[in-house]
Each structure stands twice: as C-alpha cells, then as structure tokens.
Image 1 (tube, helix red, strand yellow):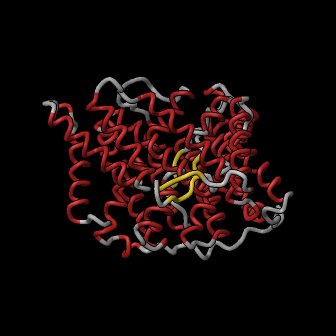
Image 2 (cartoon, rainbow, N blue to C red):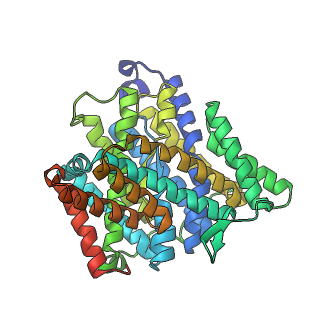
Image 3 (cartoon, one colour):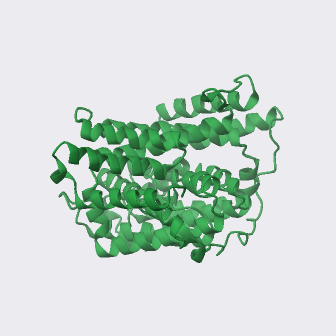
Length: 434
C-alpha cells in the first residue's frame, strides 16, 4: 500500500529509508515543541495549550505535505514569526494575542490566494536576492537579541541602551553552555543537535535546583484555551494591516525558499527559472493551508522547515518521510510535562544557534553594489535595533527603491518591490505609531 501510494520504488527509496529519514527530520525540528510555547506564552497564552497547538499544527501541516504533495518536508510553526507575534505584535504594539491569531489567519488566507493566483511567484521573482537574504539574516539577528535578553546575557543600560549582564549567574552560564553543546554536536553532524542541547541543559538545570521537574509523560492537556480563540474582526483594524503585510511577506519568502531549496537537494524539481512542477504547486498549497489551520488551533504561522534537509540527506524522497514526522509530532503531545519542565535558559541557546544559521544568508548579498548592500544592511540591523521585523522590512524596501531611483537605476526595480515599498511608506505616514 505504501509503495503504491507514495511511489517509493520509482523514487529509489524504501519504507525503511523513509521512516529513518522521517525520524531524522523530526529530531532536528522537534525543538519547536519546547521553544514555541516558551515564546508565545509571554503574550498571556496558555503554555500547555500552545504546546498541544504546536504539535497539532506541525502534524497537520506535515500530513498535508505528505498526502497531497508527496514531498519529504516537515512543517511546524516557524521561528521568527513566532517572535514577531509575541514581542512585536502583542508586546510592543499592544494587540491582544487573539487579534494576533486573527492576523495570522488573514495572512494565511491571503497567502493561499497568492498561491492560487500565481501572484506568489510574481512576488518572489520581483524581490531582489540581496533583500531576500537580508530578511532571513535580520530575523536571525532578531532571534539572537531575544535569546540574549531572555538569558540575561544582554540587559538594559540607561547610558548605552544595552549592556552585558552578570555572566556569573545561573541562567547566562547555562545558556552559554547550551550554545556550545548545540554548536559542537551540529558540527559533528549529530541528528537532533538542537533538541539534545535543550534536553541536556534542562537536566542540568533541574539537577542543580535552578528549575523544577514536572514529569515526562501524561495525557495531552486541553487545547481549549487557544482553540478557535482568534479575533478576526479585531485583526481587521486598519492599524494592524501592516502586521498582516509583514506576515505575508515573511511567509512567502521563508516557505518558498525552503521548499525550493530542500526539493532541489532531493532531486524533486525540474530545472528552469520558474520551477514549474506539480509537486511544488501542491507543496505551496500545503504550507498555505497549514497557516490557516494553525491559527485556528492557536499558534503562529506554520511553515516548511529547512531542517527537512537532514531527512533528505538520510534518503527521504517521498511523503512517507513527512507522514512519519506527522505521526511523531502527534506522539509528542504526550510529553507536555517534559515541555513544561524546560526553562527559558534551555531554549535560549536554541534560539541563539538558529540565529547563527540564519546569518549565513548574508553571503548572498551583493556587497560591491551600494544600492544592494546598503538596503540589505538596513533591513537586517533595523530588526534587532528596533525590536521589530516589520521596521526592518520597511527600512529595507523603502531604501532599496530610493537608492535605485537616486542612482538612475529605477528600471532595475521590479513592480513588486515598488508596491511593497509604497505600502510601507503609507504605513509610516498614516500609522506612525502602529
């Protein structure tokens, strides 16, 4: 049955290889079941409910990817947008988490429409590579400052805005140790390096009395505190429209880039600039629908995970790999006591290491062209320095358009870039505090 449905033989794989690949992918991305509740619970959301929503959203997204697209790609709530959801939309802008979930839902519907109409491809082709790379690197820097602040390594300073915290305290020391563990294991190509690092620091923290142990296995807690709690009318306020714009843009670049990158590595894409492929079209639909479903469950935007490349490296070539990921995320729901035992200083090293991986995108920036490099740098540094992904995108797109115009190269700017830049200008003119 599995051979017939997934076409294993035609793709040169087997049930055993696919199951092993699925396990490998799950181990490399399972850190999200600890990190996502830790981030979203800062908004007032019920941590246990977010944990279940995270597992269900990951399972559902991966299941759709498996059965509809037949691609070996795992899905889960994405890093970066969960921080934007918690620390910018709710923390800085003051919207309720219910309104933020409504914004995720609307962005998912828009994302779905963009995919169905082909506008998504037009957007991707229209945004310069330097800007796309800067967005990923900037989100990495945003995650880094969140991690350092959470760990107490970076603290507020009235003279210099930020300063170095007390590194002799438990939280900073464990965070630093966790980062070293994760980086070393990842260099040694140990599957699940980030997950192992989180668990090692959790065990050490419990052993020295820095955090409490709540157990390992229990029935899944209720999801009712977040299920269908999204406030769509509240998200339709004019002041939150730029939030939806940012969500859509990041979802488009992040998910599409990941899908194409992993699929190329797996040999699933035909050559050509348009990447015309039935599997890709279905994969794009899968991640679009997963965002809508995740918002209903009670979590930030769901996306394809670049960690799926580890499963592809292990031989995964079909949806059976993604199906295995889905099943393992469902089983993970029974680990809620363990998730509740993971302290913030155990997830901070994971955030920091993910940040270092994302900063590698800077290598794609065209550094010898100031009209490309300057907007890219502004995009990236504005995100951590203004504590907002939205501001980084605004600075980058507007400066890109202006610099091309001033240097007589306006014709190089794609209409998509002009459109996005104009929308951000409108946002700052009419909603300067939004």
